[in-house]
Amino acid sequence: MYLKKRGMFLALALLFVGALACRTTDQLIAQATPTRTRTPRPSFTPTPLPTDTPVPTMTATLAPTATATNRPATPRPATPKPPPTAVPPTAAPKPTVSPFEFHVNPPTCTHSGKTFIKGTVYNDKNDPSNRYAGAIVAFFDPVKTDWNGEYTFILSDQGARPGTWAVWLVDPSHKRKSDISAPITTNNLGPDNPASCWAVVVDFWK
Figure (cartoon, rainbow, N blue to C red):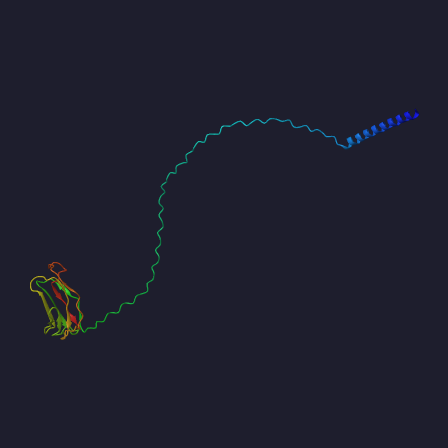
């Protein structure tokens, strides 16, 4: 009987000790675990939906029309002309020396009642009295100068005989010994016309 009570007492003691240990353990765990603080959530405020704002109507604006303005013409300055290029002086051509013994004067013309060519052959241009008698003047048919050194070719005894002619001197073998005259153009112009050419004079000189 005594043993039975003693056992019961031990059992109760063990239960008390176990309960005390469990409480102590719970306190330690509670102290070790931080208490979660509840943070109040922000209240949800509904955001109103945006109101549809009517889009403004696009009004086309016409661009201003460019108005042409007549500007006064500004005279351009004259372009200066370049200075003339210096041209080296050209040597004057040497006079051509005729290879022939006699030379011829330019023909002269006047009006007349008939058409002819005449002239005088001079042996010395500086001495009009020194004339060449018997000089042969070539034309259609060569003629010789008379004692005074003069010759004549009759083209028409009456009236005009228009044409172009020339005369020169030859030697007895018909070899030319003078320059040929410039072209002689006779015409039928009247006596009042300064260009009338009926009577022609052509002289030769040495």
